[in-house]
Image 1 (cartoon, rainbow, N blue to C red):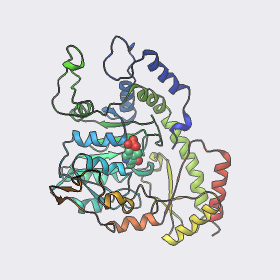
Image 2: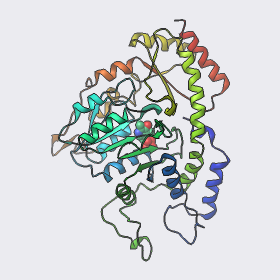
Image 3: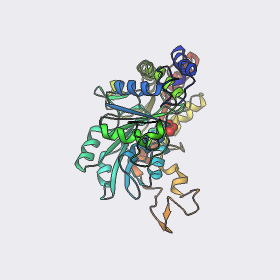
Image 4: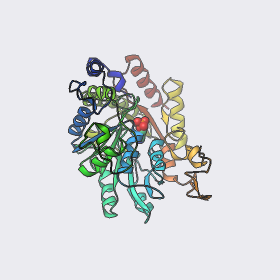
Length: 399
Ligand SMILES: *Cc1c(COP(=O)(O)O)cnc(C)c1O
């Protein structure tokens, strides 16, 4: 959760350049901005870094998902398949375009199980959102092959895995498009912010127009009011200050990942001595962004006993089975169909229920989550904290 650990002179310099012009808006103000276009520069740098042809900056990772779904033409009553272990944002974006989230099991990659994905595809399926959770790769090649076989667009929610790769290729560039988050706890951060990347220029063009009220950014006689609009959009524009911070952070991303890898290796070495331990399946260690370290015990009871020792020693791990934000059975507002909308939308329409979720629907995922423990990997851990954590793991190894 590292981006803020390394703020420094670079971010400040970029931000000051923006404040010196007084222009916080990413478009227009040609006479005043002294050729400072931080958001545009950030998009170009991010596209270059990932190897994607095009990048579109937006206000958040959640907005990035919604912009991607909208640009792909997803809407009312379409089914979009994602995994039952993710941040709530993934399915919030699906609901927000009027579509219906369908959840798959995860496997020991802690990401989408391709076999279960096959089973969940129906004639109503219109897109797949695979998530690279906890910094590391989903089985993206298998999943892309399934998407292609069914002629379905594939979005990679790469919010937690910026800078992650598989066999040297950046995560987010395997599917139709990739989305990223730069919120305040992500590997690189702009406070709030997000990005969509794609190699499909037409798709990028639709994203660009949608996130700015439909403006086509082509000819603009008399300013923005003179631009064309070919469809209705919304406002998900990133502001210049965020673009400025993003440029500073992106330049540091590979360095942050290298530091995380070194810190993660220490944790893994210490945890390896715990009897019965196994590790999350990482498809390519080299391409792991190492933002998290996840390990498994043979069963739930054993995982809880180990975590009790870790807690007693001041270093409790995250047990995703208990965590209320990232795993399906704990999404009580979704499962309980809680909404602000007086007419029941999105759970009901015209008085009829549109979908319903069974809390027990993902037993294979629950079995994995219950026995998985996890730590966030810092970039620059305080030496005392690091030592305490390693000592706690050593205690657990004697259990
Ligand atoms: C953080 C996150 C998001 C949403 O990003 P925001 O910028 O916070 O809106 C989406 N998906 C996943 C997997 C995330 O972790």
